[in-house]
Image (cartoon, rainbow, N blue to C red; front, side, top):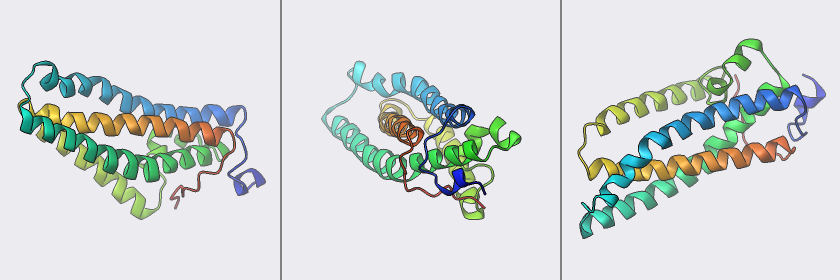
Amino acid sequence: MSSSTDNPAQPLWGREVLIAAWGVLGVACLFVQALIRLTPLAFEPISSGSLGLATWLLYAAWVAFMAYTEGYRTFQLKWAPRVVARAVYLAKNPNPLFVALAPLFCMSLLHANRRRLVSSWLVVLMIVVFVVVVRRFDQPWRGIIDGGVVVGLAWGVVVLLINAGRALGGQELGASADLP
């Protein structure tokens, strides 16, 4: 291991920045694509005026719950720092295959310890099942669910980019890359 990998808090330079940016921005683009698709559906029950008092309260409660659980506890505290830690690791230890697949590498879908690989792939499977099920819901229920998801995903994109900026500047994020 080179000295640059022994101190992950060193700023990234040149090619390292490009590799890390490809990984992080590739992940961010996946989230932004989902946000573009889901945001109109999330606002549909609001703009159509189809929410009564009870469904407004449910909508607000669901959004608050998702902001806390998905946005703060999952994305901010765990997932975004790990994605960025993996991007920094890849930038400092480039492997041509992993660089080409950097967004997948950063999401721990490749080259992670066994526990992380299993949990990452299970989360992807769970999301696919969740999407298939929620697509069958009518409004306002689909909009309520999508409203919470939009808030969580938006939070995730913001904290991902903030963490990436910090790491590019050499700040230690204190997250494990969960490598094998």
